[in-house]
Amino acid sequence: MTMTLDEQVDLLMSGAEYGDPDTREVMRRELRERLGEAHAAGRPLRVYCGYDPRKPDLHLGHTITMRKLRQFQELGHDVTFLIGTFTSLIGDPSDIDKARSQLTPEEVRENARTYAQQAFKILDPELTTVRYNDEWLETLDFADIIRLASNFTVQQFLQRENFANRIDAHQPIYLHEFFYALMQAYDAVAQEADVQVGGQDQLFNILVAGRKLQQGLGQRPMVAIIMGESLPGTDGVIKMSKSQGNHIPLLSEPWDMFGKVMSIPDHAMPIYHKLVLGWPPARLAAWQAELEAGALHPNAAKLGLAHAIVTIYHSPEAAEAARQRWDEVFRSRDGDGMPSDMPTEVLAAPERLIDLLRRLGMVESGKEAARLLEQGGVRLDGEVVAERDHVVVLARLPVVVQVGKRRFVRLIADKR
Image (tube, rainbow, N blue to C red):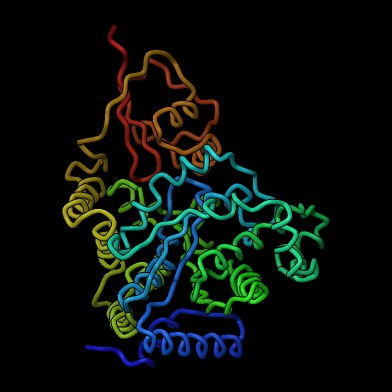
């Protein structure tokens, strides 16, 4: 069934938020005009969203903007998945209270290696153009930068909330941080973009910098689709972020992804159904009514959510295997709560537990290991170990190391 122009606008503006009803109305009106003109001219709109490879993995929070790109694809528009290989050298200062560390080109290239592959979990690879912004940003010389910068005032940048907060806190703002918005704005110019999609942290970069630079260089300002809601992390409160350690990577193994979804608080389930599964309001309301009436148990609801998410990013078979393993771990007949298929590792000499956890990949950092030890999240044969300097000795082997509820390793002694 063909959608009317107004129905297309309703779909593409769904979930968008600007903090100002007048701005929303302007964006809605401009989008309707663009769609109408594109249809009359027989050409698709040029739509993109940028993703900076500061880390090697995208996470579920990134899929909110990808789903919006997918809607544009399904309506026949040209979609570009832009990888910020040049902007990531600086790093976006939008949602942080201090300057980001600068990456090397080699680190950026390595981080970006699988970005497109991850994006194709949501986007149609046949309908997606993948580009890298060093293609045009690397060619700019100093005169070009001066010319681009002349379109903005220092006051415009200092009005950004995070910069204003840093001034109030007497924290430094480095000059190179101003260039991030300038470079991202030039992405829109280089692509002659009709529409850019982004999250709330991109409000200034897209709505102010991008549109203004396009206009200053003789282009028609693009439509900004700013997604209103952010996905909370596994804590259920703070926005999902790799720096917060509360993220669920798209590259997670099925079992790990399943377990991390199961760890989110019950109150966060509705927004996961809405933003990650894309449930419409009517379906979400019916689901919530079942929960409130007691017809659906929260644990069963969460199992369904975890199964659905693993199915999307892996396969139905992987989701079912993760579900069965979950049942085995938490509903085992002998009651010890330990899986029968846990990996086995050899210990050749006494080793500090905190170092052992890092070496076995059971934690991502020493900081995470220390935090888990302090919170009682590490066990040896079921006994909580809280001491940071605890040493695992050969005389105690074999022993089962457990981190959280889902990660197990059986340690045995080296028999040589």
